[in-house]
Structure formats: C-alpha cells, structure tokens
Image (cartoon, rainbow, N blue to C red; front, side):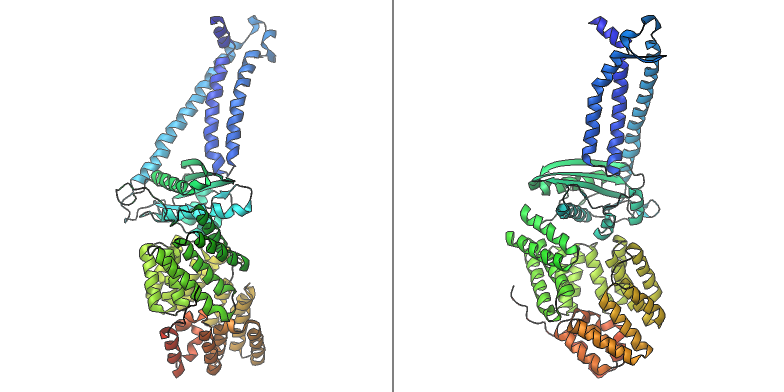
Length: 602
C-alpha cells in the first residue's frame, strides 16, 4: 500500500487531483455569479456541476495512465524511467496549485471584505425617515423588483411569474423608508437581457431583485437574486423548491431574506417578519386573483371580460377576499370606461362602486379598495368631496401607492387646485419613472396650469419610452392647439394612433381655421361614428366653435349617460367660452351637487 501511494505521488496523481478540485471550485463560483446575471437557465448550473464531478475520476485516470514527455503525451508504461520528466511536471503542477490557491483566497477575501462590506454599508443607513443619498443622488435604500422570468415553457403561466413579482414588490413597498420602483417601470424591462447596472441607473435604485419561476404541475422552483446595481455583484441568492400550496410561505421567505440582506430597519426594532397582506388562505382564490389582475393590465376587450370572470370566481371561492373584490371593481370600471356603450356608463360604474364597497366591508385597511371606491365616487357619483377624502385615506394607508398618488393628483388638477396637484403627481413619476400613466398625469396637470412647454417635454419623453403609445401625440397636439400653433397641432394629430382622438383633433383644427363646411361634415361623421358615447367631446367641439346652444345640449346628454369626461368640466379650456353664460353655473351645480343614480343590485 505504501508503494502504491508513492507511485501516486510519482505520477503526480495527487497534484492533478488538487489542481482539479481548486479550479473546479473557482469555476463554480464564477458560474454561480455569471449564469443568473446572464439569465442562463437554472438547469445549466446543475449540468455544469455534474460535468465537473463526472470529469474528476477521468482526470485521475489520465494522470495515472499517461505522462507528459518532451515528445508529447505517452502511456506511462512506454516511458523509460531514466528519461521521465515527472518531477519537472510535478513542480509545474505545484506552481499551478499555488496560483489556484491564490485566486481562491483572493475571491474569498473579496467576498468577505467587499461584498459583505456592501451589506454593512446598507446597515449603517440612518433611520427610515431620513433621506440618505449615495451613488450620485440614488437613495441607498431603494430597490426595483424586475418581472420574474417564466421558465415553465408555457405562456399561460406568465400570470403566475408576473404575479409573484408584483406580490414581492407590494411586500417590499410596505417596508418603512424603502423606496420601491413602481410596477410599470420595473416591467418595462420584461424579456430584456439588459445590464442590471444600467437598469439601476435608469430607475434610480441601488438594488434590483430578479428571479425565475419554473412550474410543473403542483411543483414550483423559484430562484431569486438580490443585486447591487453599482457593482453588479450578488448580495444574496436562493432557490426554493416547493409545492404550489406553499406559495405564501415562499413569498414570505423571499421577502424576509431580501430584507435581511438589505439590513433595512423594519417596523422599528420589533424584529417582526415581513409578510404580505393577502387577505385569503385559499391558494385557488389567490391563483384566480393573480390571473384577473394580469388580464386587467393587458388591456383588450377579451382580456378585461376574462379578468372580470376569473375575479368573480375568486370571490365566489372566498367571499371575504377584499383584494379580489377591489380588483374586480377596477376591472369593471376599466371595462365600463373603455368598451361599453354610452347607455351602460351608469350601470357599469354603479356595479364597480358596489364591488369597491364590498372590498372595504371586508378590509377597510386595504388601500387598493379605497382607490377603487374613490374612482367610482369621482367618475360615477361626481362627488368631489367624498372621492378626495377616500383618495386621501388610501394615501394615509400607503403613502407611496402610485395609483393613489396619480389619481389624487389628477383630481386635484381637474378641480383647479393646481398648488396641490403637482406634488403627488411628481412623486408618482419619481417612484415610477417609466410609467406612461404617471408621466401623462403630470403632463396633463402642467397643461391645465398653462405650462405648455414643460408638458410637451414630458410627453415627448413618454414617446421615447413607447413610441406607439396611445393618446400622447393627441395630448401634445392639444398643447399646440391651445397656443394657436395649428400647423404643429395638425402634424401631431396625424401621428395619433387612436381613431377618435385623431378625428376629434381634426375637427377642432377645422373649427379654428374657419373651414365651416369641412368642419360640419367632419362633425356629422363623428356623431354618426361615436354618438352619445362621446357626448362630452361633442359638447367640447361645439363650445370651441362658439355654439353654446348645441354645447349645452350635448353636455346634458353627457350627464344623462354619466359620461366620465365630465370630470374635466371645471378646468376644460375648450369649454371656456361657456363660462359667462348663466347656464354654466346651473349645469356645474347639477353635475357636482346632484344626487347619484340608484345603484343596481349585483
């Protein structure tokens, strides 16, 4: 046996084994960092590890059976012992061992002193109510949750990976003092293999959470990584193999692990675990809720109808599921505003309001439910006092809720309260910098305030984010129209992809250029095409052309069908010619002070 070990040493088998083990360890550290960053599938890491393990005995066999000679590689038994250079080869292998050890130790020190140091720096940030700015203005306590990659091979599972990302985003958003980028901006990078450091700069965040989801039957594997956007290094990564019935626990595990990695002070010093406020113990209802929310965000007639259908299933399974009732209200409102005929405005918005009330009856601490109710109070009841109070309650519960900030700011702007409108709208853009909704809301408020150049600059920025987005060219054209730049207005209206907006703009321009016959013909076509559904817009056209009789007639029709365009009434520049008419105040009082229509039973 002693001779055997001597022969192992002479043939450099032990040295080859050491070199192989050290280099393999270094290789796996590189793979662990690089593969997730490059969005290489999880199985590739396992395959790499398996190949390294399989290769080990072959390396030992090769070292035992062959020897390197000046003439090349020969079988060991063919080499004259007196001519062997195994000793020289052994010295070279010794140097390789030393070099590999130096690299391994350097990596360990880097991980200990630099990466761990980065976490320690996070731990040294001040209390949540203090703004700590580092990285050239980027808040140190800031994070974006990128959409988790669906690796299930089935597009129908997309809602699940997106839903998990959103739920984690919502949980992190509840951490005191942590700035969390809004969903719209984070999801701009879906499907893109972009450098996370560039994403961090674009979103203005110090950290990014990304991951992947692989679902097979009732099994799910979720991988998550927390990355420092300044260095691109991983601070934390974990893989969770679970049953789908454990999905709530997985969300809690990931959230708690991210919080620990960031060392964010949560809930004072109580040490409580961070968990989502889901409002249901039913995995089936939760799954339907995720589907419904996903479909509502992907706007089309079919998707919104499906969203309403699956959310109704969710609340049928769990009638106490407040978040599902709130989403059902928002989907119903979106269907009513986008896809119904005008005579269904009143019924559709009334049903949306009843769903919102049901959500609040189950959980009056749910900001989402307050937002749903506030929207119904605003666009259906035309009750500014109640809707403002409800929006403010939502913001009291979640001060950084982007939807609440955006809608509340829009309402303040349309109500003429310019001094109060810009702050929440600017905050919404800061939290969700790539959101067209947030940008358009702020731009609209700037237009109402007469700050046309600033408004158009913002909207041109929105077009850089999404050149084909609806309504933005129309909004830029509207700014030109109000300034009398009719040629520029025409050019922008021609680029507008939404037919009714483009047609509406052309009629306004014709009215201002005095082309009466062309204006009348185009308006007749518009009324035939859109009719009562766009009653408010038809009133705008008549008012801008100086026909108050027709304008008030169409405003009455708009009120009759509860046209949501009436929320613009107070600050609509196109209706300014009506303000001196004695009927103006009477009509305004009727809109804002009138009683709501009775809500139909659900």
